Image (cartoon, rainbow, N blue to C red):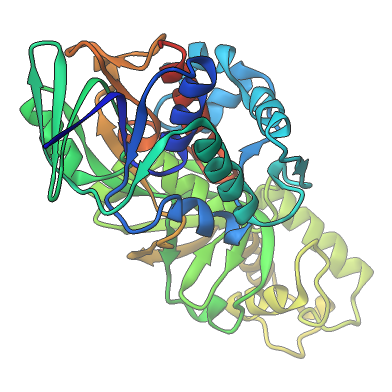
Length: 402
């Protein structure tokens, strides 16, 4: 028995729901269904942003916003002029959800709970009469004349227009390859670095604003770095992992990084600062107090790594020790050996080749009436609400065709 719909959206996540709601708000007569393979919808929304849902980012200028997307920067320029972060804020406000801006630019619901976003979507789909079907894992897709036939493990569906919002689902990518679509091989993005090093072993929880570069590449990044039990994390590291997703994959996650704990101060300037400190604090122990804007424990660790004893006074520092310390401060070398990913924040670089999508409509250039929304395409962003913004924008544009 076939179930007929005007539009079927495969994928009950952020992009799928946003697309469905926008379609039916504009066209109340259309019969729309969302097919979700899992037993519950919006599960990634629930756990995102530590359960608070980082809805978007307070960057309201499309030409600036695109710079946060390692893949998709060029293609998103047009779409963001149609629906940007400011439009997201307004959309949620119109649907009863107020957002707030945090110091780092990330935007969350005022409630501080992702449940608010989930409730907003579920109430809207209910009110608009959108059919939400869970436990529907798509087994095959056929194109027949001018409609699509979708088979799940229990049902058959027929629809005139098909929207795929299945995120990083390898099975769907494989199916699309049989339709002639090119898939850019998926590799992890947004991961932390595994580092075993005596200098940071006792310092989990310590953070500093740094600049980091990956040896033998052009990859650099600045921002807060967080030392963890397994190595290094924080925005500076996550940014590197996103921009370097392919390069670091090819290195099999074995590479060297250089950390400048003073961010933008080079070794020569650091040495000058240290020479002044040597005069100023002659009688004080070097290791006692950090003269820089990062925690004492980190300072103490870098002092020890420079072959300076705990009780050594500033006045007694040799030229070599000063140089060692300047080097540890501005050019600490760390060996990365593997990565760790957070399941809930997991993002993949890869997906449908962007050349095969019309970004004015989000329609496939190869097949009429086939559309894409969200992370299924080869677009991804750094952390901070940008991946969700791609879901909202692509969903809004896909919905504008009907």
